Image (tube, rainbow, N blue to C red):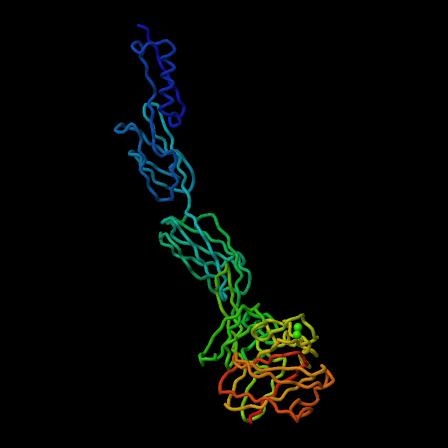
Length: 469
Ligand SMILES: [Ca+2]
Ligand SMILES: [Ca+2]
């Protein structure tokens, strides 16, 4: 009988798969040997499910070899790194890399074993007040302790992790105000240390930091009839806290971005103070906050209080905040050279109202047209009738008209005679140059009212004076 022999030689049986063996056998059959005549043998295939292991010192792992139920020999190529017992149980002994060898009848398979030190998975360091705050994450239960060392002084701090996994936070105390670099090394239960990881943080000193802080300054805080505008002089701090009493008598704390100017408070009643707040941040997380002592600014009070005690003179340019349709209506371009509204912090700026004169002390509103108006929120203390007087000048043949609208209700139209000048402001209209004419009388209840002064035609307009009858 013809004898054919199939030899499958492998230097590393662990790398030769079962399908490869089947293909080799099929090729051998096609080469001419009948199935009945063959008398083949092959080396034992030892299959180990784990081709490599990564372990920490002290850790154990049970390897197995196939075919199951047979007897194998197990050995380690370097028992200082890992040992293995007769059943294939591997124990990591020291840092390094070696092979565990499983053999039987001249065949062998090797399993790579790497023994490593545990590592820190995530590190965040935040600056503190003469300290640094660490937040770390460890995802193994092999870390016994962590050592944080200053690279400038070699001073160090040890943190007991105690073979726990999870997130840990701790403070490195007693640091100077400086950029401090740290190395972090973790150790396993056998004293093996990981490679260092470095982190740098800018530590600050709360006292010296606070000494350098400056209060944000107000350039001008203007109170008009329907609000208070704060125009800031600088941008110190991270933000400001404004404190005041609102129209309902409630105490308000309003946080204002330090870049925001002007700030308009339409619910302001009284008692403004503010603090500049500094926030120390790192990675967008607040680590410390400094709030300077509150200060109370002097207000540029241009509000309109109407009472029996004294006549109330309303300057034409002190109309309400709110812009076109709220504080005024103007149907044309911006004429007039005064930047008064920007100066007092009106968010609407100059708008289109034609204020003439210099910036801090305007002269009049000119370039008025039929239908234009300015609105004045007033506070009436004493209810009753108030006589109107006007500081205007008119250089228009036949004069012109005007009327008052109170809380949206229009009153009668009144006529103004021609002065023959656009600059005749030296006398009031009803008590001076036209004292023979009957002035309007406004009946006002106590409380807040919006008085709109509407032009029918046009004239230069400086002020309205209301006097209790
Ligand atoms: Ca205009
Ligand atoms: Ca106009």
